[in-house]
Length: 212
Figure 1 (tube, rainbow, N blue to C red):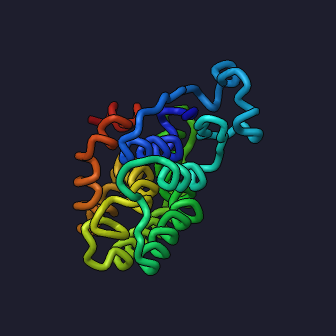
Figure 2: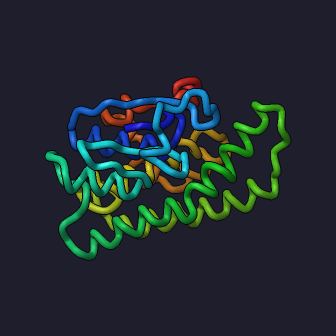
């Protein structure tokens, strides 16, 4: 697996592999520094994004494809519900993260409030306000769809949890983001429980490690 240790999408792929309990090599590099790219990386990912996965003769990019392949092709506990309704909700959660979660929680809140000021750049508070509103809707929808399950889409960890957790944790690192999560106690409790899993501890990004 190739990617960056600060990337939410790389962390999602790492979580999937760890939850399947399969050994893998993680090749870390900085997507913003071309000098750190592994040799021949464009053969794995022609768009020079992250993550990418090489498994024998199979080369994959795009996180959803990687995590679903990991679940289908490798031994270990299933990460996708067998019930068609629960499976559809799991797919919906994964899609919501790409469609709304990343742009609001990461780019709209974490980057604006944490990353940009750290680089000496001004935060756009109008972007933050709009993003917190979307984040509230996103967290509310996760709560509604969970419907009493132990985890987001089933009574065991699935791709819904794996794709959501890294994004919600980055939101949690920003004070207003943390307050928003705490307004949704079921999601806050879920996040704390997932944080205690070995997979979460072993993939701690530098930003979260620095905040502890």
